[in-house]
Length: 269
Image 1 (cartoon, rainbow, N blue to C red):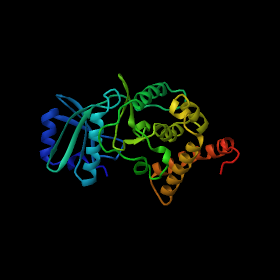
Image 2: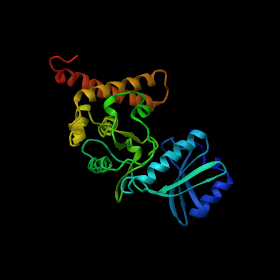
Image 3: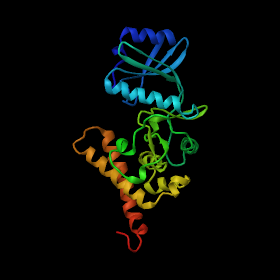
Image 4: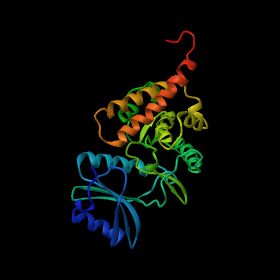
């Protein structure tokens, strides 16, 4: 649950002011992984500050901190500083100025995303315990296991177009998995941006990990992910849950109608 900046104790705000200077605070408009998230601009520069004090919030932010420190600066905002005070963990990230990525068909940001995904697929996995695919996604599929660092939440809100290229933010759900999992998780965001499932799959064929993945594996993933979000949407009031249920259902339906029969072979069960 996102809290207001005024929830921070004076010991914390004094420490931040000592690092940034007297500052203006602009709360983040999106996201809810951190209890406090805001752009802080002061005499010594601008940083993006996240802070947490609940047990879960601190564990999540500490996890994001360790992954972010391990990921190349060409992919993720750098960690400028971090400290603990008055029961709060506080992290100052490099401030990335720029709009969120436009993932709609034909957008030039898709070329930036392709470059970023290629770099990410070659990025060493941090030497730390990471989420397993089942722990992250809530369903099990043997083929999801792998040795690649995957972000798993590459929606436009977590992609910022800067003068130095695309930056990925919010690594709180980073996972160790097969590289195709990142691409399969991207499907819902491509559909949300206006791609049909067919268009999105056509775009993803530029990645070897997608082309080399058995279609039956993608069928199973699409079905399991859609079933998960359909179950979550039952009785839910949040629009984002219903949106994800709709987008994942579109992909699952497309694969069922256009791949399952075509990919079946004599003797398959």
